Picture 1 (spheres, one colour):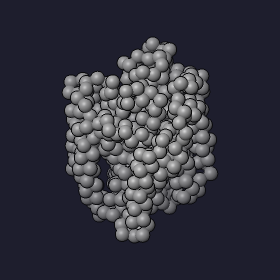
Picture 2 (tube, rainbow, N blue to C red):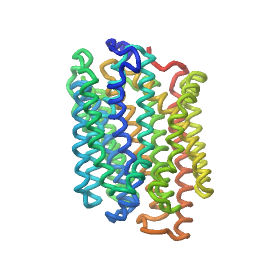
Picture 3 (tube, helix red, strand yellow):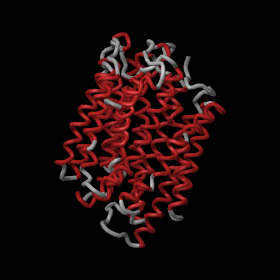
Picture 4 (cartoon, rainbow, N blue to C red):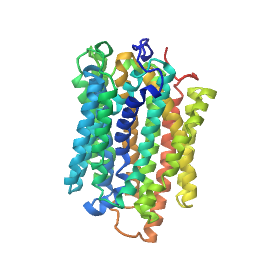
Length: 484
């Protein structure tokens, strides 16, 4: 653990400006996979009408991407640390662009879910590699941290920009083109990475054999755990499918831990979790993503169904998230410098829980109340996500940076799946499992508001406990690097 990324070989760039081309390419690669997380959320009502989908199917339209993405991140990160990070990123961008083109042939909800699942696989090859390559561009620690902040802001902006971009596009094209547009973006990113990012040096990679059993067990554990949440509402919480998937997830997780402790070349060295920085950052990231995914999924339905807004107006309603994501950077950095990582993340966790509790009240009090809650939530997200991402990757050995970034992204994607599943499940149970077309009746709107109140109140408790629990294990460091 002493050989952190700060000891990696020096890079050639001595300023952000000199690294503009490769940094822009990496930002674009991260942006396209993050925006695809939420791009279709604005189109869920349209997809439901076109494909005859119910609430559970809509959960899988968004959840299938997060499921395969989160399940395969650790495997992709481990492969990149062995095969070459640049090579894996270029392969992922190629696959992402080509698979996106297949959206024009989709005609059923099942086909769309399958397409999203495969896209998640390609995206898993991109996200962790992007983060680790950013560190390679610079030898100066301050520049590395500044570059990571830029990439994080671009990525998180993509996550919340998805509904706005999608809503605007839906006024002119069908929802299928929201996926097809990924292809030219991926192509531009591919060219930038190919020309601007140098190939991996052999000494910068690990030569351990790829832990295939560990990869399969991690995929099974994460996949079955996420499926259990959706299966509960679709088949019943005491059904064979739900109980079987829950038991399978526990068994796979136990087997993964036992295997990783015994194998000579583990995919994820569990000794890393002896560091409070690694353990706490991962846990806190789960909490932030539960909040973001749950709120985005719920509010898209709220704006378009309960309010009857158009996709464009519903997308514009997310502007408080986007503006605050960018504007909150100085405030989150001030929190870290003034109070240290632990207290700053606790403040962020408190803002998240408070904002979700505010949403539980605000859904019946109009858009201004919702917008204020969105601003407060985004300040909390910005603070916790950036501090934890930088701290976690900085704590990893030099030849394990992709796994470190993958662990960060895995935590976020698990949180995304859980957040979407919680909101979708509660709405299906408390309101309706089949979203009706057209204008909702007053009775159904009132029922929806009641379901939202319970759902956001539940999220406030879950997110507050998870994010604060993770923050408590961080250090009091006011610097950008946790481990020396």
